[in-house]
Image (cartoon, rainbow, N blue to C red; front, side, top):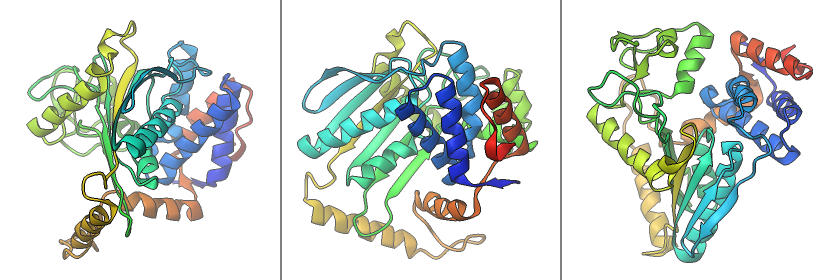
Length: 343
């Protein structure tokens, strides 16, 4: 698969969003966030999203100059409206508030409403751990039917309901996890489609409720199944409640917007930073010291693969499938933007 210089792709992405009416600071952050996802090894949330975000702008679902607004606040809580702007920019704003409140009060709950797709939610956990704050983020799909079927069901009734968490580790790599509570993320189905690849068995059902490995079946009315059967289903409902019910997203006038909650904690609030740090150091060391199973070279903690990917992809370039590159070229051409590295 072709590789491209990250900086060149980031500049192209910035130019595309700016030409679509996005203010400079928001366009800069959008370009940074999408390329960061590709660098991290998650193309499902990278520049592959450019055409769909432009379609959402065209349809009025995304207001490109929409900015987050603080609706209500206490010492430990806040509710933020995304005002239908880009979810990435609202996610950054909300995470900054959650970090500040956790540092001052020990714990914080920050809700997001009227927000669009939040991108790779692991980015917000990475922001928190960089500031020494433990954070959990839950993203709900709201009243829309979403992409996933409930356990035992054969129709869409849930979003992919991703959850992310970050655990600071003063002595080494932080633990950062980010995953959909469905069997896979929608973007990963999109990546497989653009590559002309099949999906692993057990991830999607076709429109009639039959198992399928063809990504096209998902986009023809199919659905994802919960990760880990009933366990993922239960987790999805928890995430949906935290992300949507807690933030009033079900009361929104639009069923197309999403909601989310960030729970942020000063990890040393109960026992002190030193005791906490030593506990996490021991935990990570125990994982690293576990003998690897067959097919593995070493045991890592969540977040380490992304760090390795970023180092490798900055040097080698980010992979972009030919079909994805063509879609981005078409999107750029529609805005009068030169395709640059993708020309």
